[in-house]
Amino acid sequence: MRMTEPLPYDFSSGNTNPETYPGEALAEAAARVIPELATALNTYPGKLGHEGLRRLLAARESAREGVEVDPDHIVLTNGSMQGVTLVAETFCEGTGDRVVLEELTYNGTIEAYRALGIEMVGVPVDGSGMRTDRLAGILDEMAREGRPPRFIYTLATYQNPTGAMMPPARRAELLACAKRHGCLVVEDNCYGDVHYDGEKPPALYAMDDWPEQVHIGSLSKIFAPGVRLGYVLARPPLLDRILARRHDAGPNTLSAAITTEYLGPDLWGHVERANAALKAKRDAMLAALEAHLGNWCSWSRPVGGLFIWVRLPDGLDTEALAARAAEHGVGFRPGSEYHVAGKDIPYIRLAFGFPDVATIEAGIARLGECIREAMVPA
Ligand SMILES: Cc1ncc(COP(=O)(O)O)c(C=O)c1O
Image 1 (cartoon, rainbow, N blue to C red):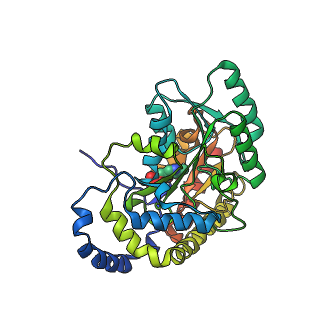
Image 2 (image 1 turned 135 degrees about the vertical axis):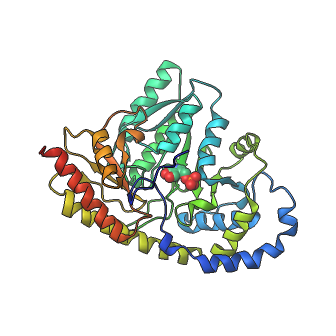
């Protein structure tokens, strides 16, 4: 089988920064903790998973949100993606069930929910995330049809792909709409602490102790996606329903134990170092966009997360641009992959977490050339 060569200027995936990978400290943490795992590794982890990591994650949530989080309400998962799928498997009963979500959202969720036969009902988004004025009408209409959604799935913080941050007033409105309709809210906060500028609004569950809420978190973006550690935070009885749907014998104890040993003493120090490096990359990409695409495109200026959402000039064929860019070694994701209905939209998503600053500068210059060539035929 012929493998596809990786592109030298690859801005397609939400990978994180290899330059802040704490190789030595992680190796030392592994050497310290592995000899102590005789019992833990010779027994199954149970449905909640490694207690030390759950305590650390409860402390992370409490520190960020200023509310008490019970470690026994945290379910460790194989990345947050397992959480995204698990909640749908738990709360949707069969093909044709509906979920309301941002019209532009994470492509992994779109693919997983499509595969589960879920009908996705998109709510328009703007620079402040899901338009709650439109959400209200959509929920009313679904209630009139007698087919309400099983839940609302939202990326309120550092929205993927747009980078939008939902302000507190809109968060409150989203919760009010959900409560009015008795509808479960699932907040996917995968980018949790990947934060660069300004105030962090509270998570939805921290704004209101209404019990019909599930919060999904991850260590992928503040630490490393390869450790495959995410979590679902929910209170009983929702928690019990989620656990009843779990059939994978539990999460990876080795990964959890090493990660806890490394991150436990200095979680926020690690986050600060990672964010400083990522912020420099975001700024490098924004500057390169200004220099090379300034006359042609506009783009988001995200305060967190790993992506810039670029509006292409009218009339540009995104597929043709992707092919031309790939010939020049540049990769990105077309906007249509993030549209719940797969609509062809004049946007692309650029990820800046993994490539180094020199690669970002050279790659965006090449992308600029590709766009200029496409707009001004020879
Ligand atoms: C919004 C969102 N949710 C979930 C995931 C899955 O991440 P992981 O399974 O690595 O935690 C991603 C990954 O990019 C994402 O962007």
